[in-house]
Length: 335
Image (cartoon, rainbow, N blue to C red; front, side):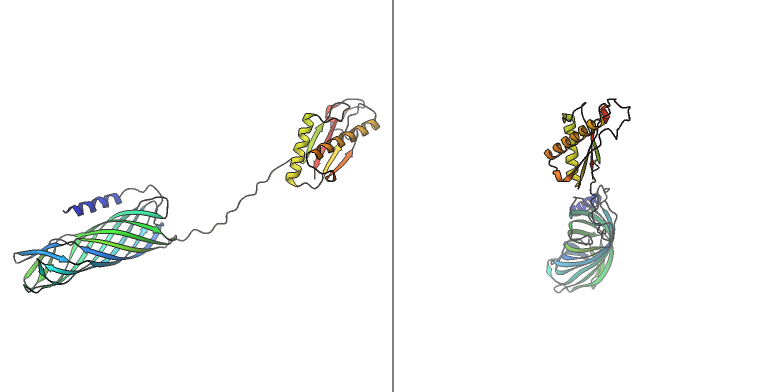
């Protein structure tokens, strides 16, 4: 076999590599059309003991394919392509006519994944070629007007680009070769070594894959859970804000602004260790101390309602005259 055929076989072997990533051709069925230029390789023809090369001009090719992409890289397709070249000479003598073919090929192709819409691909195919020879060599009177069918094989290498999810364009090179052919002529049987072609084609592919539905991205709003009430404790017989109390009031102010609280209730309390009238005044002074701290943290006075309950609403019930640290408090409630 020729060096070109060996290269084609190597390309075909690469096409059978397993897929390792998402396919570039969308998964599912597709159809394609393609067309371009065809370069027929000069080959020897022999009849009645006389032989010579059949030389052809640059011709054209046109075809169509239907296939299925499996996802991950590999796909298979059934392709039919018409190739046509004018005959320039036979055995060095001027000639005219055409050398045409219709090939039907089963191809295995592998799209090399690059993670983008542009991708290369390689493949190989086998099938049959129906080759038609129509040649007249005026100087010798040799006339051939016959056809023959031969086993065909091809190697494929190209690049593709997905224009949309359904539409893609391709540019590829295909080497097509056949086994030997035989034609009838007015001088007897004409043996033709093989039919070899180099073809460059541009293609348009349509995939029947349904586009993915448009999914509106829903961004969940983060809900910040904040306490609705805060306890600020005081030392015995004191309305002074301790460092710990200042931290609690600062947190309450920050959360009030973050949640947009429209009103803050501040209620002072006292334990039962002193007279009730004194404790009522002490609880009010404690509530006003917290109000001042809220103002220092950016809360307007108009947003705060101040109450005093003295010893009438203890957190921990005790007998009269008992000191209880948890009852010496101010309750901040965010509304």
